[in-house]
Length: 447
Image 1 (tube, one colour):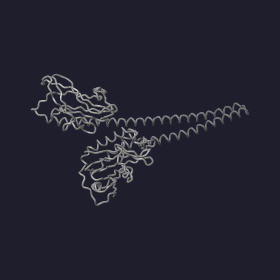
Image 2 (tube, one colour; image 1 turned 30 degrees about the horizontal axis):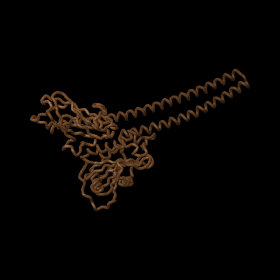
Image 3 (cartoon, one colour; image 1 turned 180 degrees about the vertical axis):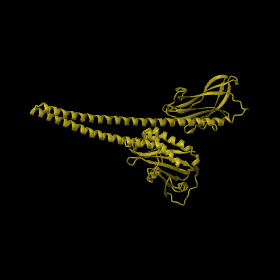
Image 4 (cartoon, one colour; image 1 turned 90 degrees about the vertical axis):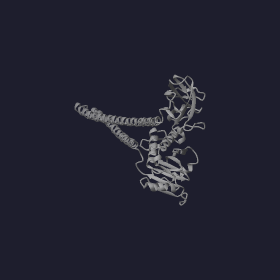
């Protein structure tokens, strides 16, 4: 399902959006109609549907928003769309580059404008686009435009209202606002926010108690000085052993009270260290959750490749003879002239990407030396199959080379651009085909 994604918002230094184009007025109109903490504002403009999600931050009049554009189709259910946007907010707060928690557990802006974090904004847009792309089960053909209602007519609903009524209104009215008053945060997200609020309250209580103990301690020090003056006067006036004995007893009691106060202060400091440790453990748990998410995405990609491999293997018949067997696929990051920037098998980082070049290791016992064969190649980026005007149908490229008997390697043409940072971070897949027969694929990650 083709779609476009916008990221926009009003942060510490005003409004910005990505990408920056004519859609500004639509998003401003959508924001002017928002009333709740979170909502989706649906806007129809002919055959184009805008699904704009608005999340109001916890400080001033700031907000963050996402908008998904569909052409000739519409969503017929909104819960999954809300979930995608809510997960994007939670991910942005967890990463802390655009949004973050303050000491009170409130979500605030971490940057002045979105342009300060262009790569992070692009990453969020790509992530939302990829998740929306697979929502084919809640998409339907867009009906013709209704001219019974004025162009700027507006309707609003709660997400708990009848779904069929909301869907009909979304393709009939110019603007439809769907409010979500509660349950707009994930469980782990809400738990982390509540823990921050609790820890901040505990910290404030401890500081108040510390200040109170400090005042009492200073008062005891003053009393101690006063007792010393009394003892001195008594020694001057009476110079009596009995008076000295009694004064010594009073001093011992004062010292004991002071020691007790110091012990209480020490215990409160220990409690504060324990709370800081608990906070560190919560941060560690958040990092673990992010790691498990990464592993789940990787396993999903491997499962997809496995399913595709099983499907492709079914098309191979006993009458078809494959001239070579590909045993391994490696990729490197090279310059426009073919010089190695990142060697085969090493981690490839997005900031240094130029041209992605595949290399195969193959073997054959049936070929005559220097037999010319042609392989078809599919190269999948995070945005989908990479193609250009010269690409054959269904593939990225087709390349011929002279194969030899035995085990050998061969490097193929590369894809990309001469400027560093051409390929974004994400999962990539390269497939090799002989005619319509699938040979081998490799999935790798650009960091």
